[in-house]
Each structure stands twice: as C-alpha cells, then as structure tokens.
Length: 486
Image (cartoon, rainbow, N blue to C red; front, side, top):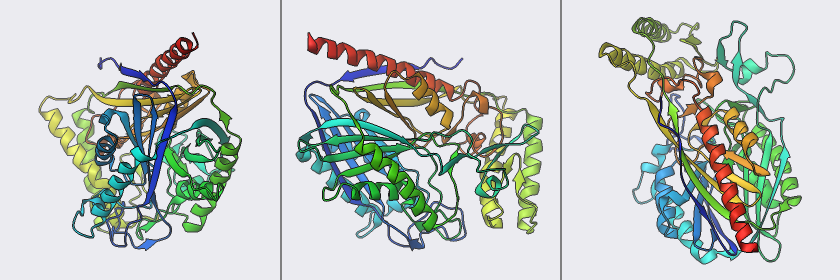
C-alpha cells in the first residue's frame, strides 16, 4: 500500500485583513523558444500582451505570497516571493494559466544583458519587493457565475470502450454541441480598499487555453483567460485593480475551437470576462474573513509496469510507426492508443511519439532487471487558503476535472476554488480511478513523465486528502471565530 496521506499543518490569522498587489508586462520578444514540437519552435508573432501578477495577503502574523503567470517558472518565482516577503517558501503559491500561446520555459534561461529571462526575473523581483510597502486593509467578497459554452471534456469514449484525445476536429463529428463533464463555474474573489474599490480580483476557471495556439506558427496571445482579465480590469476604470487568473483542474478539459486562432480566442475571452464582471459586481461580502492556511500531502499510488511481452509488442508497434512516419505514410494517426491530429505534420507526429519509445525501452529494461514496480507512490503537496466562507485549493500538475469537482462536493465552504498548475507541473496529467488503464494521451501520460502507470484510486487520493484538509481548516476557523466572540 502507498504511504498514508497526511495533513502537515494549519495556520490561522488574526486581526485586520490586508492585501498588496502588483503586475508587470511579461510579453516575450519574437524568436524566444515556444511550447511546440513544430519545425520552427520559436515565437513568430505577438498577438496580444501577457502579464504576470504578484500579490500578498496578510492577517496579523500570517502572510501568504502568490503569483499568477503564463510561464511555469514555479520554483524561481516562489523563492523570490519568499525572499521579498520574508516568509517560508511553504507560504507561497505560484500558479500558471497554462496558456499554450506563450513562451517555453527555456526562454527564461537567457540571463544575459537584454535577455528575456533576465528581464522577466528582474521585473518579478521588483514587483515582489514592492509588496511590503503596498499593504492596505481590505474587505473580501466572493462571486461566481456559469460559463458552459467555451469548454468541453476532451477525453472521448468509443463504442468498444477505448478512449481517445478528442480534438476539435473529432468533437465536430459528434451530434449537437458536445460538452461532456466540465467545471462551468467561474469564480471571483474581490478584495476592496476602504473606498469600496477593488484592489485585487482573483479569478478561476477550468479549461485548456489552446484556442490561439498554433503548432507550426507559434504565437503569443493571452487566449481566453488573459483577454477575460483585460476586460475585467477595464470594467473598473478609472481604478486599475490587479486581476489574476488561476487555472482549474483542466487535465481533460479543452477550450472549444482548438487552434482556432486569435479572433476566436478573443471572443471566448469576452464571454468569460462578462461572467467575471457580473460575478464581481454581485459579490457576497464575507463578514468575518479569518485567513487560514493549510497544507497536506497526498500520495499518488503507482501500479506495476506492463508485462514484458506487452511492452515488447508495443515497442514493435512504435518502431513500425516511426518507420512509416519517416516514409511519409499518411496512415500515421494512431499508435499504442494515442491518436494524432490530421493537422500535425509528420515531424510533429514523430516528436510526439518519441517519448513513448523512450519510456517503453526503459520499462523493458526494468522488467528484465526484475523490477516491475520501480516506484510505489509520488507525493502531491496540497495547499489551501481560506477566507471565511471561501477557500482556494492549490495543487500541482494537470488534474482531471473530476478531482476538482469532488473537492468542491466534499468541501464545507460556500465557495471552493480547486486550482491545478500550482507550484509544479510534474508529474503532469493525473486522472481518477475511472481513468486507470485507459491509453489515450492524458490517461497514459505517465509514459512522458517516465513513471509507472497509476493504480486505483489514482488521483482520487488527492480529492480525499484535500477534503479532509478543508474540513480541518473549517473547524479551526470556526474555533478562532468562537474564541474571538467570547
């Protein structure tokens, strides 16, 4: 059995709630590395601005630091927040929007004079260093709305029981406007100054921002999440609040019109922005916002590697696939359960399959060494931040949507915000017990992570651990409120 998941601590604030926030432009220049496997994997067009947001929330001796960016520079940003706010790294949360129309992590490696990495981290340090002087007392309110027209569940199910990655070209073949299991709730936490004007708006939604993403012509575009933030901030002119976006458990949830381009990305952003604006204007004020911070660790269980004969059969299939790709055979859209888009060039298909080949060879070597279970489990850290009736749950990796929904269902809070892509991207996609054994891109992504397959209950342990943490935090908050009233 995997190690038991544990709660590692709960902290409760006292006194006035204070907030400090800052933003900076993090739009990269043309030519920096882009997150694509295409023939020319560098940014070739700038279609809109990218912003990085940093903020801190303080109540008495409890200070928490946050950042939201289109990058995935988790550890460097957490370290800088920690140093600027003089708090432990464990009190920081850095989230990624997971926008695909952005720069790749290697773009931040250029620390030369004038290099993008140097500029990004200099700006980040400056913004973080300004926070201690920006704190002001605030009230907090929460709002939510429904947006169910721009996302769909991209894990398709065939009649024979097998699963596949449902791209837009596949979704269009289904009857009606297919949606599947999604999380349609768009949440807003609104922090107002003494004048009733928002200083900080923390938003959340669930769905891969891939509308503007282009495989062979990488662009920079805020996609629906960034455009929604721009519209939300403009709605509060002449004030200019910081509006930060946190991505939900979107492992198996796509935005519609994948690769659809700039105009469709902007339209989706308008839709979501309208929901945020309405939710923030009708937000419910929290009367006694006790700041609570809780941490826990869930142990994600791994199963054994497939039998040697299965692995060797898959190796032969992969080698044949690569051979046919090199020969230009158009019938190269499927291999060992993975399906590729017709829009992908041959080189892209080869690059997508290469990690599968690497993992299969590794797994064969493990089996030959008599090591069919190289790892037992992987620790998944969970952080939660409560504000009276509302709570924000931060988790790493690309969690499937049902994990977030189950956290919300079991939570004692009036509003629960389950966010993935926080503090780490590894070990990438994590499904639930229902997804164990499926072979499509997301459920079998353990191959890309060079890990064994998951075993039941898989990512359900994350939801179970998070719910236990939230219940303990809710009790601690109630105890604190009761003591203050007496």
